[in-house]
Length: 165
Image (cartoon, rainbow, N blue to C red; front, side, top):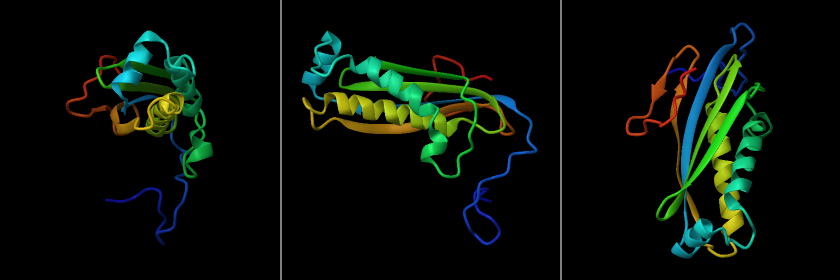
């Protein structure tokens, strides 16, 4: 397996995508934030002391998708043309699912993962005063489409919304 972010001497490099044609691309990711029963009830009732946790997390995730090159030194600056962050209250956790879309020269997997992880961090930040045990788990790419490698879906994580580009 050849790692594209290493040169022939094994040194880190930014992959040159100048010659690639922009194509429509999308990626989806998800994570869970496990919370106490008390916090899950407060989320359902809208009584978390810091305010609307889900709204803050949604906006944080969208904003984060646009900041990936500031965080990951070898990531390309790309146009994030769409970012959807959905938060669902499950029995014992908040399920965060994101999809990021672009029409650019490289994929948006890191943007989807970053949006998901920052949305999860926002949930933890908003509930930590009530539940210090809140934890982020199961952060992963669930699907991607577009580019040379085409469409891929993680088995067992078929999305309820398509990432088809």
